[in-house]
Length: 284
Ligand SMILES: [Zn+2]
Image 1 (tube, helix red, strand yellow):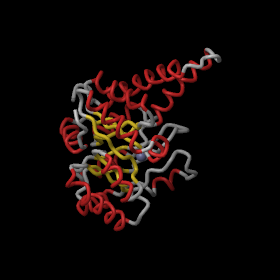
Image 2 (cartoon, rainbow, N blue to C red):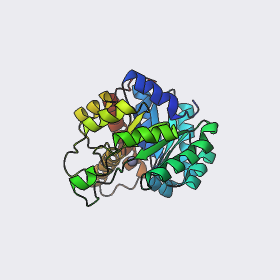
Image 3 (tube, helix red, strand yellow):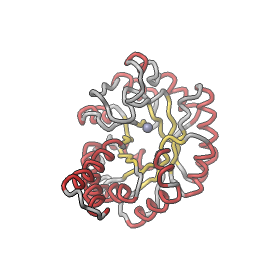
Image 4 (spheres, protein in one colour):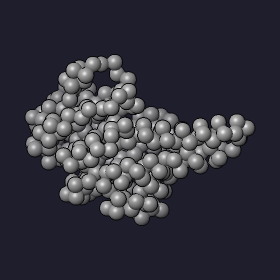
């Protein structure tokens, strides 16, 4: 299949009360793992590239690998830019064949975030490309801030309503207690806030930083209206752990395939597990 935008996928997920997994890729093996997992589960899936992935692999490699994987697959696949930083970068991804983009204007003042998001929507919606924006600030687990400081950055329900009315964005990433990276403890999600946002906003809502969020909390978030869930760290952990296991087992191993093959299998397994938790198995 050709790459699809997120609009249809998220619309179906919202109606069906499940979530689409959005998995970050960095290399060929992880692209293959995401697609293998999606096919094994017969699930629609979003492959996304972060700033780090683009820096590491380059936009062209990521696009070409993902397009090829999608063409060979029997499940719908979107290629999404994760945390796009500028209008120029979004346009570069659009020209290269991404089917979806995030423009992260969350560090800007509200009106500037709205203006930037609208500029992106105006440019890419006519091309059939979906747009995700962020409201509130989803920080990193390494950010040295207290819980109350983090809560001050959570998404305000009234502001979310205002934002989606002013932008008509396709998906909205919200800050309700998750963070990017490896958690030191167990993240505590503000479910009441999520419900309040959902009551005011019918736009598909996105949960970032979902690696390390317990299964029960993910299910709860989905039941309260989250329909796209981003997973990056869990894939890295599984991938590197499997590769390390091979190298520790035989320090003389020099065949990269002997290291990357098991790493790819481990990534596939964790992605399948997440797809099942998200309820998107069989929804392709
Ligand atoms: Zn994120």
